[in-house]
Image (cartoon, rainbow, N blue to C red; front, top):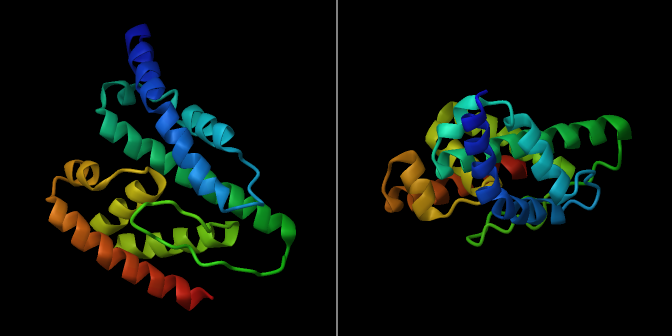
Length: 176
């Protein structure tokens, strides 16, 4: 990576840092057993992204999408590790909810694993909806940012958001 690319990537991260940390805090808040605090989650995501020279030239919106995916992967990996350590734990689930404020209030490790599985299935049947949910839930993108990123209208995002929430709620209820 050239020094210019490194500087540009560092600037991208600096601009997005507080927003990503706020989002990491809201995602993590509902999981009292989480081992990653918000700062650690954002920093771990940064470490995953830091050596990607192509990110330096991406838009702020695209960078947030990629950071959202990195945070999702880290949260899922941490939840899987905790579940493996519990070896049959208490099996408690609390339902992940999707509200319009995007404050993922009740996200425990089992919820995140169930959500990840449901998102993978949604990606097979409705890839755009799965990408939209990932960007809104894990990346904190609003309606207009999501529309711009996916190159669709805000009405389409709202329609897809409602459909995806209903589909995911149904899938998550089936796992409980």
